[in-house]
Image (cartoon, rainbow, N blue to C red; front, side, top):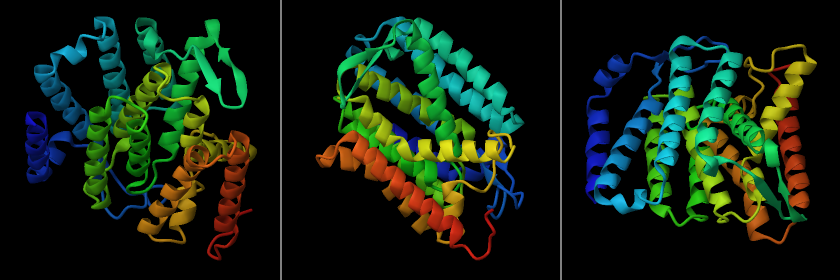
Length: 336
């Protein structure tokens, strides 16, 4: 109860001293009429609000629930702190100074190598698939496989962050899924409402998450998914795959399209699924459509008797139809 009260006071102060806070952070996203189509320069401090809320939450929780932390080894706690703070600072530095995509990836890989070397519980050593009886063990490739998965997710969700509310809504989907697959419900409830708070500010055009916020929430989501999976609270890796399928598919489509056109796959364009939607529909309708598309695969898999491959193929078909409809039914644009 004390934790909730402190968090409410802190976030109320953020709202009350909003202008002072933006001036203190002094990082803005300025519209350029190309990729950045918002009306005016917008503060990028969603990640800072999130990291400060985490500091308050865990400090207060440690003070009142010390026994909870005793089940973790010191190196495990230090590795998690290092990982979360490092991902945030790389993203925030990119918001402020603009790192090249290659430097970002190299930095994140180095951070992950250090963290995984310290904390073995973060490593995906094996996966279970619903359509395969035996578990797949990665052996010496466990760390590279884990790094690949986290980097892929980071890039997918970074690509998927393009309009107000989009990323925050998707993260609420992830934390909702984790809530139903964990014994640590308080942590995911906290994350859900924290992201919801940032979402409201984002929709009111008060702030953007920025790379700092997206990287931070991505690594928290990655850590949570890996921990819950390694503790056997998530039955199959298929579930995680389907949960993240929409941003993954859009990343693959964009990468292939850019390479085919001779463009750098890491540099942005207005061909993302959210851009295609927003050309035809309002922000609310676009976010609602993306939310529905995001949850369709995992709902079909968990709540029906459909097999993984049937869900996978069905959703690829839905995604393809949606993209074709959006691209070839826009009279204002010529997509060749």
